[in-house]
Length: 275
Image (cartoon, rainbow, N blue to C red; front, side, top):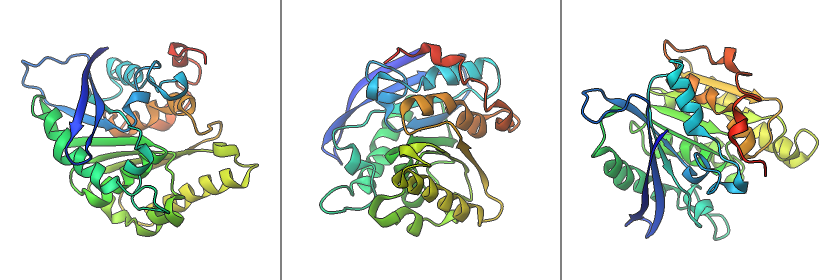
């Protein structure tokens, strides 16, 4: 895959640096007149490279996207991985709780005012098709982007979001009509954090269902929800279903993602090092 590591990007707004990585689509050519959708990924260090990923397991998101693009199942897209920092919890959360968290709005300012102009200044981007995707706290900050940065993104991927933060602040404060002009994917695993046996895991999954019901109460949204019966809360589980948000968000002729649920349960995970 055509992958370019841009090195560390310094944010004036946050006063720290993070690594940025771009993955180009198969037919990418700077000289053509074609413009591409772009998808920004939180926790970018976990997306493409097992050597930088949490627990040594990557999502293989670049490989999955390339396979889908080469199979002409999805439109060609540019991927941008935004690595997390030591301040991940603070940067991905909307409010401060007992002195922790709450840099989410500032992180979104960094994303929209600093990172996006830096990336898109040089690339042939279709700015009407800009997406954002993340898991866990990354799912939480993706929801916050819909709330605080309306009309910047038209596609959202909300993977196993951490909705417990600050007494379910996001569930209470999220208005589904914020998703009106976008396409939105949300998912959860049935076995996250020991669910259904452990109460903490049951609650984690139940909160996502609560938000799902709230979103579905808004009519005419372009929205899909999926619960993976085998998935726990880790990179391997997200790796195994990463094709589904891609198919829903970027599928050609609105590809029926449900036909592909088992498309790569065992097939593409051979890329990963055993941990």
